[in-house]
Length: 138
Image (cartoon, rainbow, N blue to C red; front, top):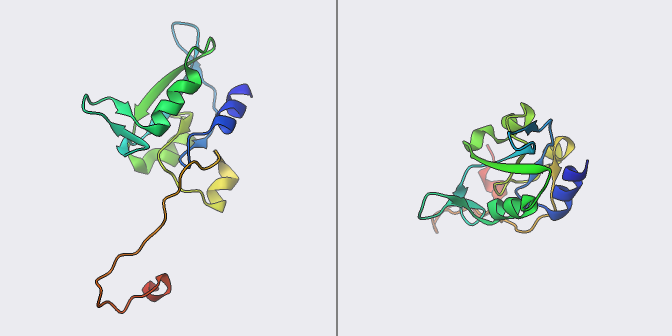
């Protein structure tokens, strides 16, 4: 499908997980494609001072569909816990929100090429016995 290929190539940062479903047509005759994000992870998706969703993933999604004769983009702000269940139930077509890739998720969802990375860190008091991730087991 052209849309799937386009979004896979352009990508929406580390955050894109893509599931193209049966897009609905709106009154303009265009197929409506819904992009979902939590809107709380600056710089990927957040609300600007006017309360409008913006950020890297949001702006890339707008650019992809700008001037499209076939598709109209709808942006939906969601609760982070519903990202994958919303994809699975076709409540939205693709998501962006600094999501982490795992092999298990990679079997089910198409991820874009990463454009950013978020390193995992562990912060403990200086006098803590915890010196590595291995020390927090159990």
